[in-house]
Length: 408
Image (cartoon, rainbow, N blue to C red; front, top):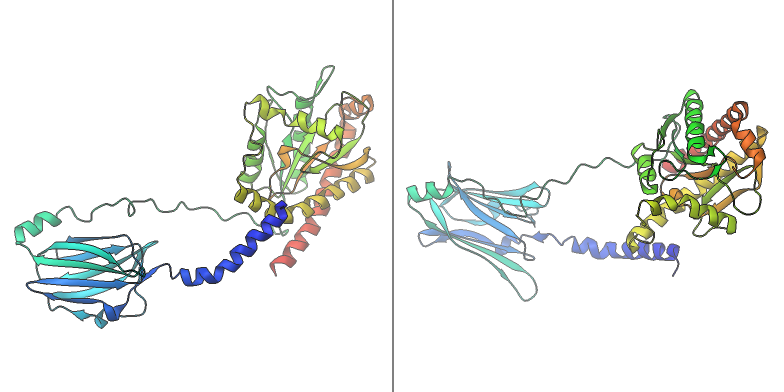
């Protein structure tokens, strides 16, 4: 079964499961007031709570004023009021309800000091349960000593509150500046391609800095995955883009081919496998950074994560396709030289962010003498960078228009 088929199968399963979950999210235990009671039991008090299924619970006593507290994870008390239960005259007040995420509470005010003589949960053959609490009179001094420590801690109760997570960044609609993350390829222990004294990592860092200024003057927000000649793992580059709230991720390279000839700019999109031998060679070269770092994350996604990422890519991939087309159109219009196959696909790890339109741009090839001359020319670089700005502007307008239609 292909990954898209698996994704659709998962969605269908989840959808079908909703009706079951709707009943099951009756998975919360529910109180049956008609079968529950709070009554006198000799000199003490009997509390019997009939619930639809067994739940973890705790019961303890507090002083000033004397009261019994019972916490449940979780009992849904429903619309019934505490007054609907048979009430012992020794219970001065009774209240219940939710108190925090995942917990509900019952509080019974008492007419004097008591101790919990017994507490048990009985489970019936069909899964229903009954929580039975028995309170017996207690001497005042012993009651005070036993309640002095206050609310007891239990492992489930002491779990930390869920961490507040920022809402995911939504698609750009043109209301805010476009956020572009530039990724100067290679760096540090991975210098990339070399031709004489020209080193790809250094060349692309300088190009990215110049491009960043052009884009900022054009009203865009820009971040770089590296600001100096340092090694940055491929996975970290994607993390930088996500932390920056990137609308676009653009990885910049100027590679070299050991065999054959290639010249001009090339736009690469992500593919499961390289589209040709040259692309396969480039993918291996670009991805060697993680091999140098001793980390290879390939194939480590579990099935659910892979399905969810593929579902995100279903929306993101057409947006990246349109960005690739806009780049080719703008570069050609500026007079820039393009490869004879200007848009190609390759299995570049750096393009694998499922939710950010990502492009790898080979600005040129260091194995081409003509490309090296162009890359060394500041006038040519400035024109090429203006073309990238024009492409991003054109793409952003169309992408925002689509996003606004989707939200309506």
